[in-house]
Each structure stands twice: as C-alpha cells, then as structure tokens.
Image 1 (cartoon, helix red, strand yellow):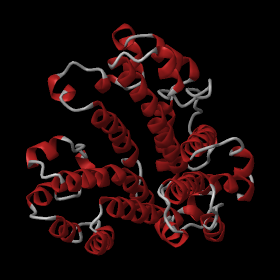
Image 2 (cartoon, rainbow, N blue to C red; image 1 turned 90 degrees about the horizontal axis):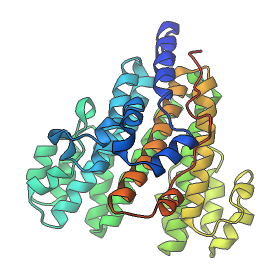
Image 3 (cartoon, rainbow, N blue to C red; image 1 turned 180 degrees about the vertical axis):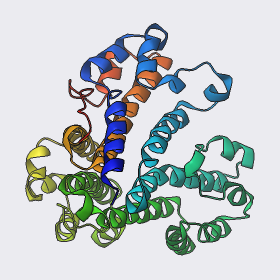
Image 4 (tube, one colour; image 1 turned 30 degrees about the vertical axis):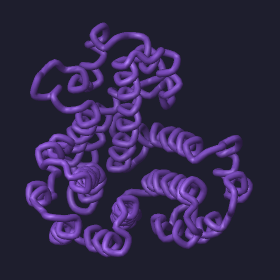
Length: 353
C-alpha cells in the first residue's frame, strides 16, 4: 500500500487531471462547433493530439491518437504509485497492447506485409512489453503464440496457442485473450482490495459485471453458443453477478427471459433493453455515474485514479464519435445520438483526500 504522502500526491494529480473531464455542455459544444472553431477547448481538455496538424502525429489514425492520450495520463498517474497498486494500473493499460497483438494476428492471417501491420499498432511508450518486431517476423500463428508464451503474457499466450491449435479461429483467439486478460485484472484487483477500500471493489464490480453480462448476451443470443461454451468464455468473478447467477443466465433460451431473471439492481436498470448493445450502454452509464462520485470523494487515491481513467476513456469515445462524424459529414443530430451522456458537473472534481 502506498504511503500517506504518495496518496496525497496522487490524489492531487487526479484532481488536476479530472478538471479536463467533459460535462454535458461540453458535449453539446463539441457537437455544434468545428474543432478549428474551438481549438482552446481542445487545449484546455488535453485533446490537442486529436486535432493537431503536426505531420508526425497526424499520420496516425484518430483511434491510435486517442489511446496515446489515455496512455499519457496513465504515465502521469503511475509515477505516483508503487508495488501492487502500480502493477494494477499498468496492467490496465495492457488492454491496448493486447489489441496490438490481435492486430498482428489479423494481419498475418490476411497475409499483410509487416510494414502495413506495423502502421496499425498503437505506440505503447513506457508500457511496451511485447516483442513486436519478433512477432512480425514469425512464420505462422502457432509460432507467434509460442513467442508470446515467452513474454510477460505467458499465461495468455499458452492458452491461446492451445485454443488455436484446436479451433484455428480468430474468434476463439479474441475471446481467449479477453477472458484471460480480465481474469488477470481481477486477480490483481483482489490483491489490493483490502488495502484500498470498498469503493475500489465497487468500481471493479461495475466493470467486470458489465463485461460478463454483455458477453453472455452476445455469445448466447447473437452467436448462438451453447450454455457451457458461454460459461467457459466468461471472466471468473466474485462480484455482484456471481458465478452461479451467470451460469443460470447462460441456460436461458431467449433474450427477453434475462431481465426478469437477473438480480437487482440490474433488473430495474435493464427494463426496456432489447439488445446486448442496449445493455452495454446502460451499464456503461451506470459505471460512469459511479466513477463520477468516486473520482471526487473516494479516500483511496488509487481508486480515484482508476475512476479517472474510466471516465477519460468514456470522454474520448465521445470525442471520437464527434470528430469521425464531422469528418464524413454526418448530421449533428445523428452524432448527438451516438454520444454517451455525461453529468453536468463532470468537471467539478474535488481536491485530494
């Protein structure tokens, strides 16, 4: 556990960064004005890389630049952490490195040139750990996954190789990567939950319960997977949606049977949801609502930092929707419909504990 002085320093950093979070009026402004008209807004909110004319930056796709902004925040916050708490925050950034791994695999399966694949990868900076150049030089997917087994992703690589040798499907690899990664996140969270308090556990529960439920609905009703296969692909959990609850939900045969069968508060939250996408949007809004409270008031600075990272990613999704929509001349009302809502007081983060 980090000391009191480090906790205060981290809380101060989070409070400063949280002033850049977007409010509902901010989203309205984004939807109505062109980026060139509100450049000071992008400067104030730390979003300049998304609209810059710098050739070295703008050559990267918008999606890559958004992740770079997130990683820059993670660098600032991780410097104030140590031990298992720092390990947790850094592991959170590894989602993007696994996305790089998926991109390499897809490129190789499509026989793309190494240069083409490399251009699609996010620059991980100080969080880089995959031997990208070695992976690009591998002859086939089995060799690539064997090389991943010799990296810090040994557990993920080993399981993925075994799955690929049995099924030879990209879907099987993607789901294995996701399930193993989030299982690792849950283990790292469990190692610090006692130290950092109940708010941290509540936030982790919101993230993992949402993922498990959306995955369950998608795998069971969109992909028509068998209950046993769905259950195998979910994240082992000790949160509100228990293993027993998820196992029971996986046995259902129709989407409309889920909402009456799920425990509260999910039953009330999901009233009227008609698709896994609806469920995902509702639960993401609930997670953001919780994170907004935590980023201002949680005693643990790590919990505030994690809440901030979730909210920052939420905001960057909205900025991405606006910039992409405007670049292809989508009507403003359609862009607004694609935004995830933000409370009016989003920027009013409190000071350090």
